[in-house]
Image (spheres, rainbow, N blue to C red):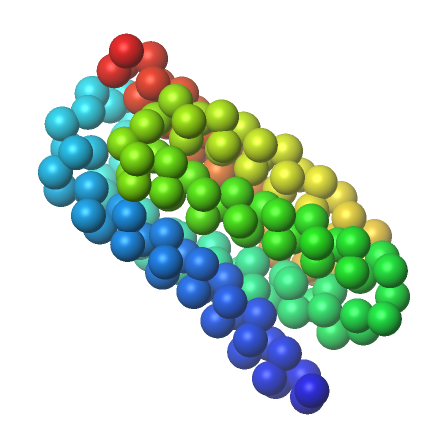
Amino acid sequence: MNTFIKLFLAIIICEGVGLIGSIFTFNSINIWYMTLNKPFFNPPSWLFGPVWTTLYFLMGVAAFLVWKKGLKNKKIKRALTYFSIQLFLNFLWSLLFFGLHNPLLGLLDIGLLLISIILTIIIFYKISKAASYLLILYLLWVSFATLLNFFIVLLNH
């Protein structure tokens, strides 16, 4: 498979996960989510779409930079397995928080997601420093989202 196709697939897979997760978000954002008590630092709803689209793009490029090193290598397979786990946890958060309207389950998931992102960054760093750096903004945003999720749980229970 040529390099461009690998890059395209990595980005499309990540953006696709975001798109599928957004189905739960769109159905809840203007109805259920608007009724929740949120902390003063809650960003405006319009900000989430562009931020997540950018982050999924960067995640795709990061995965590509590792993938292009070759899937025959066990380190690469392990790194992409960690990446896949964090991507699944990312999707699962949308399902739990927005789909099931359960901020507490969302908080449990996002805690695991945060740990998974950190592990992915560490493993990626050993293979491609650039790939690990591309995930730093994602780590920062999910850290902020964890704090936001935590306060939503506190303010609504």
